[in-house]
Image (cartoon, rainbow, N blue to C red; front, side, top):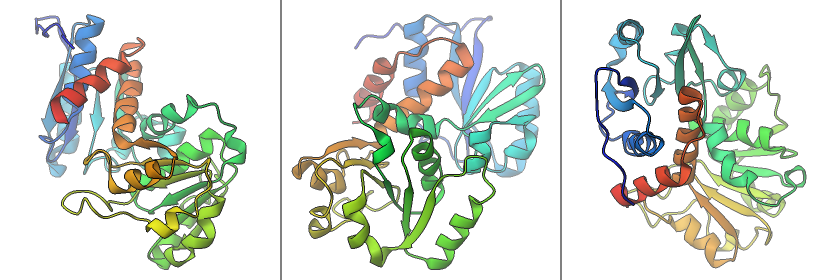
Length: 291
């Protein structure tokens, strides 16, 4: 893939990503590839912002006319009180990952849910008959719960290790504007839950480096999944994970976290530019630079 190099001029408008640290972010790779392909006079930059400097940075962004930015750890929650408007889905998830400037000030949303479901929507599938089983109950799982509700899954089953944390997770959704049909279960109930899954999602860190041979499911548990189940791993390094190797061997359709990364980025870029993003270019840029 050949992409025309970006040219920064006096008229160039700024986009970016904030985090602390942020040097690991791959967002500049895919966004600048997309910007170049669209021929836009923009550039996307990483901004390392320490937690105690967040408000100062946001005020500074407004002063210099930054058009918008993505947010990564540790600012996804702490930025919310600093925004003029927060979308319903971001309020439900409890985190913002995309911000843009409006006449009223900074507005925020969360495109992780949209990024997660984008490849699933492309499938010829009646999701109203596909219960979702989510492995893990951390921050990533919150976006997946919202996504599965939007997708139309009849119910969402969340599995975790700690009964106390699961109870808190369930309680946090009781006043949510999304009102997903949610139930929580401890890990020892997996064997009875797996045969019910139309979609199974690994939202745990199990399988990430350095323990790349690990999987959240045993081979025996994998055999309990129905043949039409879709498997989704939010991890994208290594690619494929042990979990996705297992389900692929069983003949199941699989998706990994790279697609979610691309699609959430594409959704953000469309908000900022009001143009249809070149998703294939963004995906290929990541594949060439990272894998």
